Length: 279
Image (cartoon, rainbow, N blue to C red; front, side, top):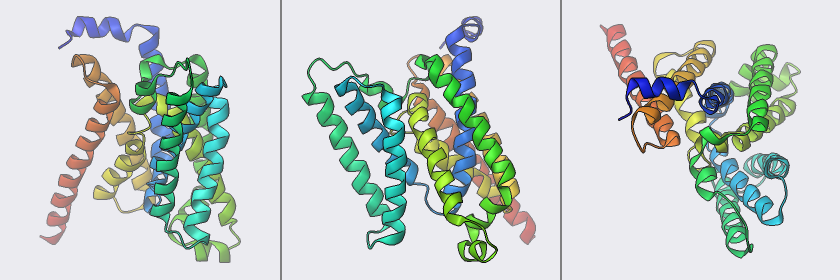
């Protein structure tokens, strides 16, 4: 265990403050995007894209290319293909995601093993290394959080409509394809940047847990969105400080544990709320 005096020293360091900013920004982005994805039952797209992102980063390292510059367009194209396979072809959505996930992981692993003299932090991308984020990743996370927030503020009613009733949205003149494409692109960016935060294998938790927690207590889209954002940020903060206080605790795992804990507490509150209404 780390003493509180040591924790205060850690908090004063630049890398911790950078991790704090990046974590809050990514938690905000993931929770907002997760509300729409989870309610449309597309939440596992994030898992598929994270695996694609890992494969793309591994290939970039093997070829000597810039990881983010190569991974971002690859993940965006993959998100379009996954949605197209899920909606237009006979391949079910889960199967489409599984195809891209396994193929991307296989390509990434092959690139690492075949590439000679490749220096690639596999653990950092699989399980996250938020204390090692670069200034570029910090700026990207801030910009992404701002863009996602603006999109949800200005397109809130359209996103609400597309999430629950696509047919009605089309009948009112809403460009549903444009909304879905926008969410796909933003989710792709969030996944690629978020891999450094919590890892490719754990990034889906930032998308799923906050909305699941909110759904246990609230029923309206507005309240679910607000609570999802709040619980996501709180979950990140608890996980970050938990990892700092417990020696050897991986930050990515701690964030997942804290978000899961909030989900369990929300479930209990939701059950008590339901019993109270019946009585």
